[in-house]
Length: 292
Image (cartoon, rainbow, N blue to C red; front, side, top):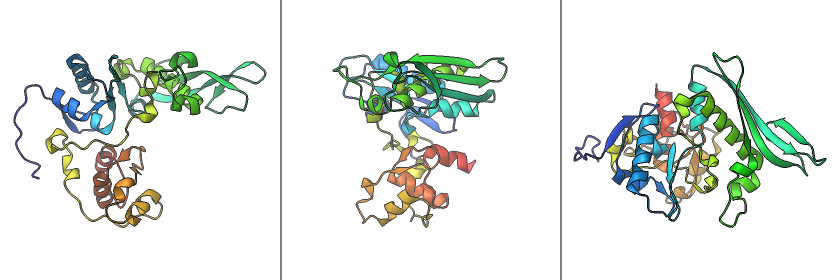
């Protein structure tokens, strides 16, 4: 496939550059083909809202930085991926650090504020808190959130798997995101993390990068067209070693993850990355950063 092929101009297409420098092209047709999660039928208005959010915030939905989710006849949810808030905050010149933790009811019935997510047997998580330190502010920007308000639930009212098994981790993250949005409104205004929407089971959402059939949709599509022989695997990269040990045709069953951000990557992206970055498995965004 020639990466310089000419594609017919679609007046509904919008092209923009992401924060990492990739050029992304979106249209209602592309969104419906690749980017809708859930079994619901998204409306034209919901599609356009998703498109405009991605463009305005420079999000790459093919790297799972943004999700359009609709179940049944309910309204669609537009949320960001797990790492968008923290990675962008870390790169902001005014960011000076963060603290976050949880509120628990101890076995003696006392409410206790705790840094981190550790709980003891017999304790119950009831909320989360976070503080963001920003240059130019004399005091940290704080946020507190309630477990009752944020906990994700199934249709029968019971907690979904993520909230049932990791309540402290989930509520701490919601508090951190809320504090970051308040501390950096220009960067995060209108953006919501997937775990803040209690009708979504974030553990069920896909994490693997999306590879469009049309290579012109993403600027760095040449990664998907070249399949060189993998470079020798570093001994420390267990997943990549396991990948090479699989018989031909079975490698698709192995999940590979970016060594920098933990994002799941496709076989082709992993092969390209290992051939160019000394055996390392990197997602598209981190390959771009390493190459700069």
